[in-house]
Image (cartoon, rainbow over all chains, first blue to last red; front, side, top):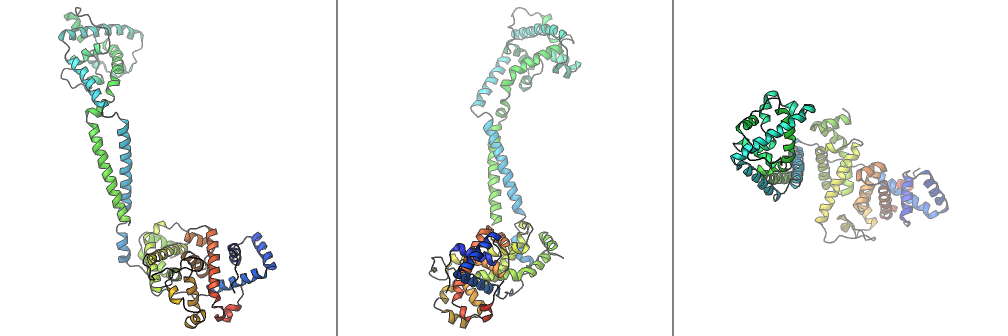
Length: 283
Length: 200
């Protein structure tokens, strides 16, 4: 009759036969075996069972299982494409995530038109300034340059604009310096816009009656020593004013948001298509 | 050429090198499939499937016992076959044993009315053991085949079935206990050498 043992005793006897008990467990089991005839009988039955199992004759393969190119060719064919598709899908997903994050971080659509409107206003006001204002603006620039000239004499001429601008360019810089705002304005009358920038920048309001032709000429063609400090002084002032308006504009102006949407859609479709193809090939 | 060189060449797509490995291990692989499935045709299919899968997945072989790696693949093939059988049972009812566990072997019903003595008159000892093996749950059958038929140690079996050592120990003990109970009815008919044999 089979002896009923607990699973724990069964495991202990089985492992004991295989030499898988540690010395302490073996000693404990041997002590119990000496005390229990039933446990000894169970051990003997388990030993016979194990012996029988191990006496099973080896089973020989009925044939050779060598593989032919046809056997593995059909299964290996899609393999080279799988990693490529998987990588492409992963990259597309990664790029899509970056584009989505970028799209989220740049100003949303409602903000862009407002900025465009404010920029357009500034440009229109500059272009509509009367001729008299041109003169006063030029005049206003001249005193500012003269005032700065004195300051420049005291300070060292090592400013960025001074060092970077060659003497030949000083003439151009005497007339309001080519700021990013001037570059941005697509108007064919750069002088007007640049001169009108002075009032916009909060410089002292010009007196309408003051300009004379000589002063205007002096303002337009100043001595070569003057422009560098003037340019050095004016450029940062204009940049300080222009920077907040300009930063968010380029994407809105070039229609970047539409490009982003198209890019997002393309990336999403590509990631999905390559991912599905990879899954299909894997199966 | 040694085994490592053959494996490396096979990884480069050299089918001849892999076929030399196939010839070296086909008996082991087929034997395991037969002990688990209990059917020669199914074992043949599982062994062939295992070698094809092994060749196609040689990159996943990380070194160690190549035999254990092959046995893991053929064991998985056997599980697949057993699942297929379960989805398409050949008998209307899945019989349960006295502990309520499902008996997966279709032969169980064919042999159920057969007394142990009659069975021994009809089959030799090996078939009696195979009959008892097939009454075990598949997880137990796999472990006892690996340890007592293939001669693997617990650590290797743990790698093959990807379970902890404690699970191997437990499944093996319970499998042996059930086999002992099953073989009890055949005991008087066994050759005297087996009845009297003792191991140290």
